[in-house]
Length: 545
Ligand code: SIN
Image (cartoon, rainbow, N blue to C red; front, side, top):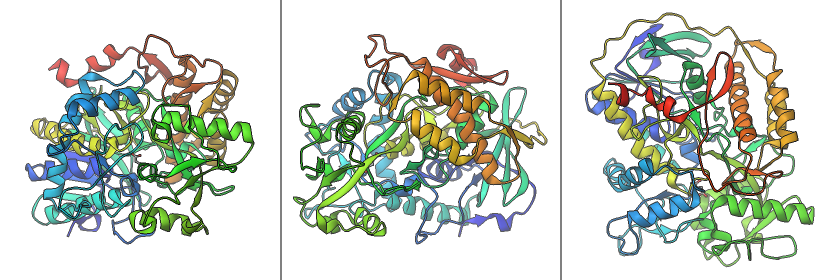
């Protein structure tokens, strides 16, 4: 039984380690740190986790395809090959100091998850079943429940959290949103948060942001409702630096439902890995001649090919032709259910799809152990920019990164356990600039989606800059402020990058510069300001202590 907030009603809590977020990175970190003897508090934005809820609050739950990992027994694969595929997808911006160590740690992180009870699909001979997704040169994606891999990961971690909390000092505070990172003398000393409208504090020397992504910057996304860029805003306001924020990955195949907003069903890339083909309304292939890997090219390539076909035909969607996939319903039960929920039937063999906002490739700049530029503040999972994804994440590398970086963040927290914490007070937020949710999403979807041009970017930048200040009364106010600040940094980064690369396609700058470099931004003197990466990381404790 996880100790929940009703067991601890104090307005001020104390811990050795606070984890903001309850997806793969957060729960992995929380369990590992508690097992190492730390007092851990998890701030869970969603309600008390139950596997049977119709809507879940973490992106982890909704991950379908699987976990990309090199299994030592797989003679066709190697960490070198996985690194090469990741670098090829990343469009020149993967960071070699992060890519190899994270991928090389993958198998031990997955083995630990299996040790905690995760059940992956297996072949009749008992070996792990593996599929392929875009950009992978071999079948290396392990999966669970057909296309319910994330749900299996979330369930395993949820259960492990519950059993660990029965005998360790691990508290999960549900329905709680972080509102500010507390600092004293530049060091992290805790988190201000809100539980169902009630302002509270938790004091701790180490805080991990594991808040997920920012899909709700856009009108339609594969992300759950809470993916509102909270961690980016918290980090920027605390003085951390973000990088590669212009690279928002659009998944090529989000279910097309006319006029729909909010979370939409993902149609896993594994559907193409098992033989599904992208065709237009006339049955013509969409990606022929675009890339040697065809429908299994990296995501940016496939999404742009779809966008180009929609522009030439004027059609609202293309189709995934799944008629050649045997036993589609049992291999892809999550997709089948999502399609049925939209009133469609996979039996027709043609699933209508469009590209949809899916993953934030950039994020809070960290080193390979999750340290940000603010001592004591860590980031892991989608909110973080380790350098693994570069300008376009390789499919199914994200659950792997969450597992690996969650463990690494826990190790950092353990190494900091004896730091003295100066109590910081208050940090309640009064008013912040915030656009209306729909207005912001329409602006971002119209001019800062798959393709961007200088005029549209400038229009959205002006709109964002003119956002009025709003009292931060409700959780929605706090989310809207986070989305507004994050949109500003996405737009600033997109304006600064006058080239096309990875997920960032500029209609006015279609060429790719020979010189590839990441761009970093901070929130300095009340404005989004570009800063030097070396200066940004110089502040990490690893380098200063
Ligand atoms: C998918 O199943 O296509 C999603 C996997 C991912 O985003 O990594």
